[in-house]
Image 1: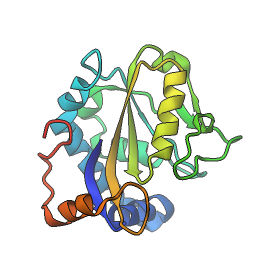
Image 2: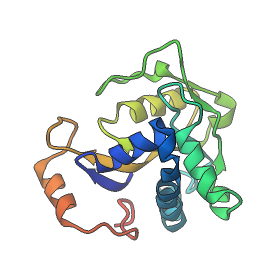
Image 3: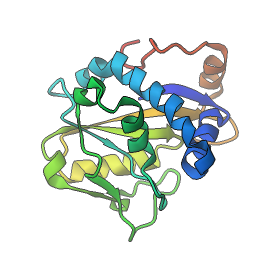
Length: 194
């Protein structure tokens, strides 16, 4: 479930700068605000997609490379620290980790072994997996499978953006690209309650 579409690497460029260049850490505020506002407006839509009608635990996609900080957790806690939005769900920031002994999934590859899960945190639960961007879906699909193998009953994936780029073969059709390029984005838009 993407919050917005990203045309020709616009969002990816912001995320790359935020994650890999210390001088751009200030981007956590606008990116975190986007995530905060969407969760505030559409948390009930997300909950309604689960069998029990609620998310039991929310996790963030772990970074694929060694960084001195966890970019997604930093977005959430930096903008909404002390706010009730974090209380919408229980956040399990440490229950999903990258497996350093296994390479990350390649584009269009399903590799759940690339992720380690604390089973006690997700067993029998509906899990929300928050990722920054969806390109081919291999990382999110692999992490989702790892969560399910650890006992998660249901996994919903939320991304800041869905990359649309006609120069790649990752599901960006001309029709979707044209529609996203033509329409003005509105926070009220939600793929679940549209």
